[in-house]
Image (cartoon, rainbow, N blue to C red; front, side):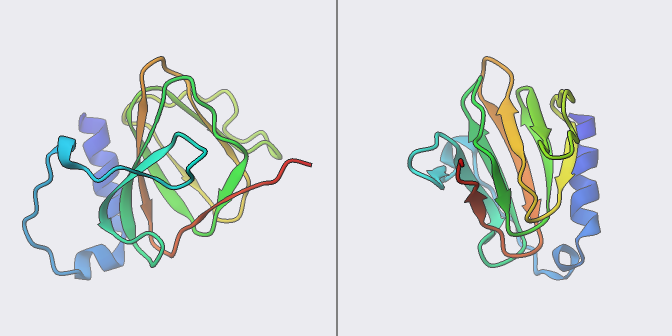
Length: 145
């Protein structure tokens, strides 16, 4: 967990608006997280931790079933990600970037906006990923040709 805490701390320290925002004590037990599906036909679930990712800076958990692979997609904002649970893979098919890199809890990566990429939960158990974005963020799926 130390690696995870360092990675999360680095992300938060890098954010100028995180330091400027008024912070109050706030507690949400893990069983009370408000999970929802962004796309009804895809089993990925999101849980907002702070902010509203569609409007600007936000921290969000992503949870997917084990052995699930996301369709080719991209996002309208850059993001930073940290593996919280499971074994993950994230790669850019057009460049090969990230291919064969296995990301275990505490590992992290960045993804630039508008670049189609793939993700997969390699473990049998569900994967949970922490996502951080500064700018308005929306997921778009690439239509198969």
